[in-house]
Image: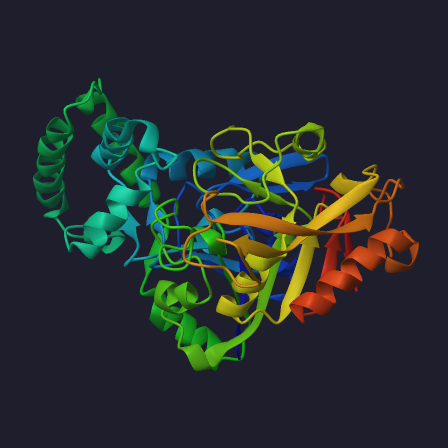
Length: 423
């Protein structure tokens, strides 16, 4: 059986959690392949809003096993809180949630290093979520990290102490005012580690291989978005992992020839959290309306998201890099009431018109060029079929399909799992 992928095509926050939840009924395994608790996947159903950070978004379905893959970095403290938040919902966590032994652990000092690094950058800061993600991936690539499988060894605390001591020296090197009580942080960390040990740790690449051999279906769940990819995103304002389709292969141990459908999620407009270039960003009433109506606040940080018109240049790039086979458009309902809509179809790049994403999209190099569309007044949130959608909305969808050369198979018209139109 092929492994299908689901990932974001913008700067994250596209609505991946909702779509994974919607699609889970079609899969036997949901496997998260990269990122850490800097992710905030929001699911809404039965009048309840759930925010997941590390746990895959299929956890509320009885039919699927959920796996935290080797490409993920796990903060045991945040993970424990996530598990505790699930307790009222009578989920058999021990049988439904498995963790790769090769996933790396976020230590308390990783979070402190993150804060010290950002503080030292001043105005040039990246806009980190301060969850310790970057320093953890640095230790992973530097071959210093601690993996989940090490928790099964009697010597793991000795390894922990050695790495933690190294981190404290690095924090001191930054020479910034970071106050902390490591003893208190460690007590919480060690307690969370013991709590996490109630779950089954697995050799996930072998597990997934056997799942495929037995003919069962797998959906790989990504976090963040393609424009935050460490290689292909708007570097250095990116995350520390490969958020694109290739990251599923390295983050789960799935060979490229086993990849099937690649589901790409995007908003009908564009948002970004934190620092970094954003060519179509709006600073006017339209941008304010998008943020207010779309409730554009980070699920992990609570920070307001920057809002702007859809950037088709960047979206085409993400479709190309990921090999997207199906598109899913989110939050079209947020654009109801706009008299006119704009889509960036090309850039003026240093005086030359281009239609591809260049090395730099800083404001000094790039000016977006727009195509205008008539808006629609109708409220989309109660609609349940494609035939009910307004003509102007469908013209917008048809234009995007033609330009992107990929079908839009799902249209979301609200946050609830029921507010989903399949085409």
